[in-house]
Each structure stands twice: as C-alpha cells, then as structure tokens.
Image (cartoon, rainbow, N blue to C red; front, side, top):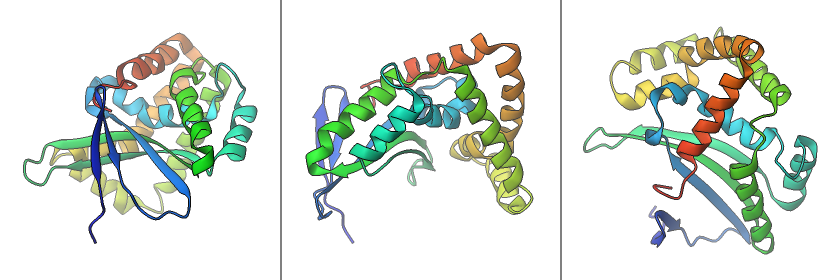
Length: 209
C-alpha cells in the first residue's frame, strides 16, 4: 500500500507530510541523525531520550511536565531507527521524539516538544540516577529470557555499521555501559552531565533534522 508523502524544506530541516485520514489526530515525529554524534556519546542516546521526557524542564518539574503532557497530548515518546540503505548498506540511524494530539491541540504539542528538546533538566542528578538504575535493571532482567536476541545483536554488530550502532544502544554493550554509568553518576557527576549536555548540543539541530 503506497503512503502519500509530500517533501518540503524548512531551512536546513526536511519536512515529510503524509496526508492520511487519522480521525483528527496529528502524529509528529522529529528525527535527529545519530551519525552526527562522536562514538563515545552514542551509548548515552537511550538515556538522553528518556531524560527529554522524564527530568522536567526549566519551567516545570518532572511531575508537572508529565501531567501537562497527559492533559494536552495523546502522549510523548522516543524511539530510534537503525537500519542500512539496501543499495549501499550505508547506515541510517535516527533518534525520534514523537507525539500525537488532536488537531486543535497541535500548537501545545509543538510547545511541549520544543521545551523538552531545549530545556530538559539534564542537570537533575537525582532523576538521572533513577533513570540509569531503572534502565540497567530492565536490561539485566530481560537478558535471561531473551538471550538469543542479545546474542544475535552481538553477532550482527560485527557485520555492518548499523548492527554495531544497534548493539551499542540496546545490546550487551549498553548493559556494560549502564553499569559503569551507574558508578560514574555517584563518583563524577559533572562528567555525566557534561556528556549529556554535549550530546544535546551536537544532536539537536535543524541541520539534518
């Protein structure tokens, strides 16, 4: 089934409009090219995605911001795309900040996404500590029941660049990184905050979005 698409330019960003019947709901995905990042910042991406939504902003704490999201939108979430172009095997890797809202509430959705991207409290040590611990516990709990999946990711990471990126974000490498990060949050918080701030500076840009 062919999906209608209209390609537009907005400064240095590209806009893809899909004119579909959605019963009055706007779905918006804002994508940032992970190829812009230095390799040492790549393992921070899953944590950064959660931090955008779960640390609060300069205007509101975490609870207030979460309630605003629930009141004004149908939800805000992050995801990643990691694949390779079939014709060239060139890696395609994106971080997506996604949201949906009724058409009449689209301006509020845009304001919330804007605030999350530019004003998320990456200096909130307590929330970052909690997010790191939660992510580490979830990965540790999932490996025993999904060992074949993690083994497959590990093997695929040796075959192409996109597989390597995927393993850094979601595989055993991510678990090992989170274990080190949990200790680093306690022993050298400025380094962790600095890495997250640098990631935002490198990634969140109109260029290539």
